[in-house]
Image 1 (cartoon, rainbow, N blue to C red):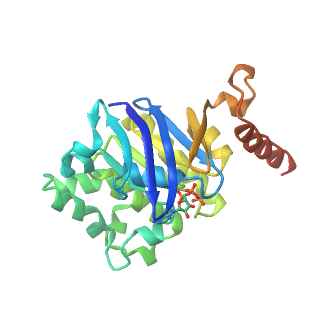
Image 2: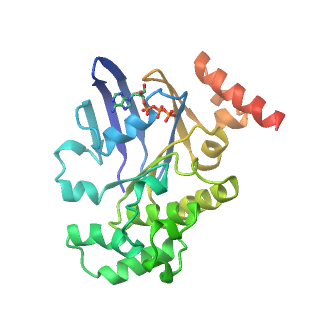
Amino acid sequence: MNPIHVRDLSITLGAVQILHGISFDVRAGECFGLVGESGSGKSTILRCLSLLMSSWQGEVLIGGENLRAMPLARRCKTVQMVFQDPYGSLHPRQSVRTTLSEPLRIHSMPDREARITRTMIDVGLPLAFLDRFPHQLSGGQRQRVAIARALILEPEILLLDEPTSALDVSVQAEILNLLSDLQARRGFTYIMVSHDLAVVDHMCDRFAVMQKGHLVETLTRGALTGIPEEQARHPYARELIDASIAYDRAM
Ligand SMILES: Nc1ncnc2c1ncn2[C@@H]1O[C@H](COP(=O)(O)OP(=O)(O)OP(=O)(O)O)[C@@H](O)[C@H]1O
């Protein structure tokens, strides 16, 4: 298990600078949240860390090792991403078995059947579902498959991009509990984007507040639960938290 250090992460797409010198540290085994207004750059940070976007400047170290310098195979076994929309992120014509066996084949991993069985059990899906296709699964089951695909190479870091926001409210808690449970049992490090501060309160030890491509403040969960010395100082972070508390009270 290794800590993550992000230093001065910046990216410009076209003529627009999307991220401005983002720096934060994530402890090994921690769940670190990224929150902030729509378009503030939260998902872009995850795309940079997963190297789905590669034209960024700055430095990302995992256990002191430069992420960019890591060979592709090891990087895939270190960092995996789970996307918001499981329907969009799964191949419609691939069975669950194919979805899970492809990464194992590409990375020449041994004991493929045993790994697939263990991962299905880990994400709480019956083995009979291995022969199903995405359209034969519910939204929650599809997201479990997407999590299984991320887990199959046994990475230590999962990048979670709003992993429950495309799901029915009743299923959201199930997936969050699955993620908490996996973290407790397997010791993953999570970086999780969410627009929902209740989810951040449930899942994250600490979180960063993003605004217009800048990281304005890093806070602990205590900022959400009223611990006086942990309160947000930056005006936008305070506004975001106050608005969320007011919304919860009105519900
Ligand atoms: N491939 C791209 N090309 C150009 N601009 C992009 C690209 N991807 C994202 N952007 C822009 O970067 C900014 C940040 O987008 P990003 O998706 O990271 O925001 P976000 O905070 O995750 O938003 P949301 O909460 O709505 O998902 C937005 O203004 C978006 O339009």
